[in-house]
Length: 149
Image (cartoon, rainbow, N blue to C red; front, side):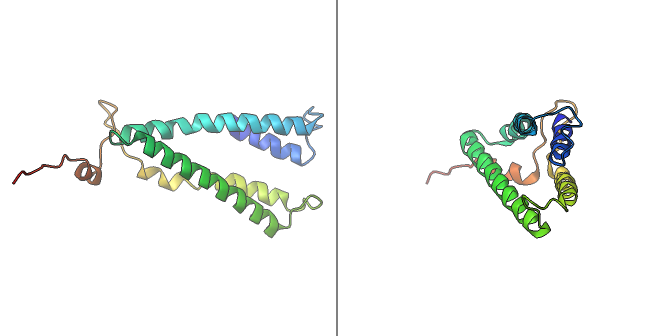
C-alpha cells in the first residue's frame, strides 16, 4: 500500500506537481521515493522466500535461493529493458512528455499481471497451516529404495 502511494507521488512529481505537494526539491523526493520502494519491495519479497523454504527439499536450500535470486535479477533486467523500449515506442524523451500519462497507466496496470498465477500457489492445510504437497512433488521426494544384489 505504501509502495503504491509513493509510486503515484513520484509520478505526480514527474509531472511538475511536486511544488504543489510542497516538495521543493523533486530530485530529493525521487531519491527518497526510490529508497522507500526498494525497502518495501524487499519486505514484500520475504513471503516468497518463506514459501520457497517450506517447499524446498532438504539439502538444496542454498541452490534454490541462488536460483530465486537469479530469476529475480533477470526479471528486473527484463523489466528495465521493456520499460525503455516502451518509452521509445511512445516517443517519451527528456524533451517530450506528451504520452507520459499513458506510460504511467501502462506501468501501474502491468502490476496486476501476476494475479492469474495466484492459483498456482500451493494450498495450505487449514488445521496445521502447513503446505499440502502436490502429486508430482510427492513422487519426486519419495525415498529411493536401494536393492543389493
